[in-house]
Image (cartoon, rainbow, N blue to C red):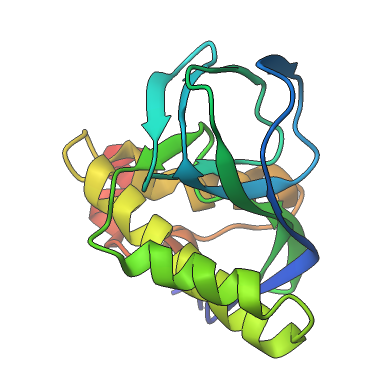
Length: 196
């Protein structure tokens, strides 16, 4: 019987920028975004569109835009104001480092009963306090990742194997065990075989 390696993963947030602003460009196309981003819309309305998504973002909504995304936006209101943070999320799985994203496509969380308003308020107030900034970013990541998992749960479950696919791509020259990648994805070996 082959012995599987214990699965460990670590996340590190790097290259953090926080800004509060009113966009000047009424329409803009972004190709291969360099950093991931959370944008809280304090005022205004936007239309975002890419090859895979098409949605509207308005006051009180929070948008996640992953690193590498290509999209365009159009401002639909006269007055806009946003609080935005940009960052890279580095993931280490079994000692192997890679850049990570929560989801491959941009998506929006509609008004969240003030939860995200408070976190973005914290971010805006604590820009010079590195630990408070990191704590706020981890809160945002947790909210978005949980929402992403809930939204994907209605699908066929293939999203569950995305970490395995990335791991295999980066480690294809090494021996890879089903037990390891199943544990990495939080599913049983038999379920992994069915999905893969």
